[in-house]
Length: 148
Image (cartoon, rainbow, N blue to C red; front, side, top):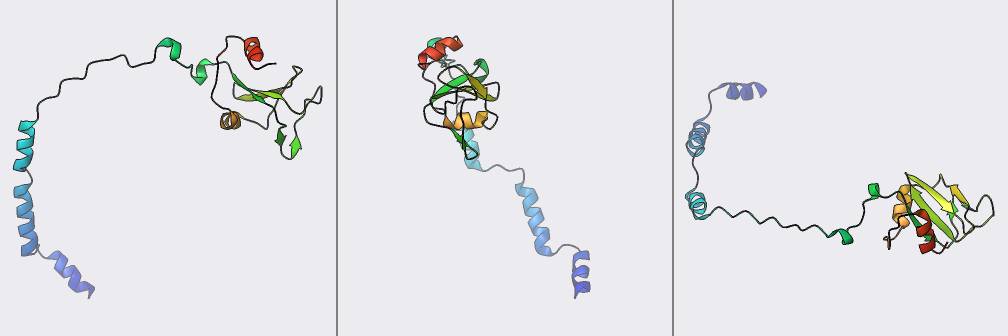
């Protein structure tokens, strides 16, 4: 059976294949008349006028690489790996400020003690942080704004 298939393949192309190839060769360079009519009807479009569509400076929000850090209040206790996070110095376990800076997350208690929390990362902060409501020039201005 396979020897018949090999013999057929070795022979010249069939009459139908030859006609197909000839027809394809004739049609290859042709363009339908509808396309030519559409090209003639189309007029070159005028370039769009350049408009400064960027926001005015007072409405622009700085990008993450232009900020030294971000912070948000967190009033409820933080539980990580089944244990409640407490301040290492005073023992406070709620009413935190969570600071995200340089791909690190820091916790600040109400009395001003800060501790680096290695179990939290920037992705966790981004998932839990809401939109920024203000931008401040100094760390102290931000603390006053958040009531600490």
